[in-house]
Length: 241
Image (cartoon, rainbow, N blue to C red):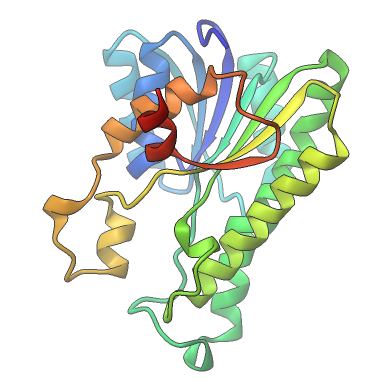
């Protein structure tokens, strides 16, 4: 896929991988709508995109708020016209310090599920219709190894990411042959504020930089050979190139 002039919506676009993707995709000529809760950080990301010659609009909204989904979809249609790609990069870690499931409040699990799975489902449902009518589109879920490995203390995050992975697979199976594709991409361990909150003792020098991974993911978005519904590690894809 040639990303020039493509309309791309990125949730979680104010920081971390979402912000790095915005900067990278904007530099490649995509037109962006960035969504996140933090308005000031979001506008900072949009300004960084513009500084590199890209086009990015900022919308402060919470993807876990079911009423905000209509605002997000409507704003995307107004500002981008066609939404060619959706990148679900927004994520909720759950309670920190990380804790055992037995010590996790039901409300904390619910919040992780609302952001990482239910919010994604609502937004996908709101945006997939026009893609189906056009016969093309790509919806990407940023996943984690915590969705496939049972890491102690990562219960709320891991369970919600696993749910989102499986939702992507079901979307892909149900819409196979329509021209709308679904991918789950695991970026690896990134040097982000979320990772620092989860693992403050980690050696930051051993973590991947969001900007480097963003370049890989941007290239992946243009790889039509990736099978619909596939879950793929960004590092593995890069190694095969």
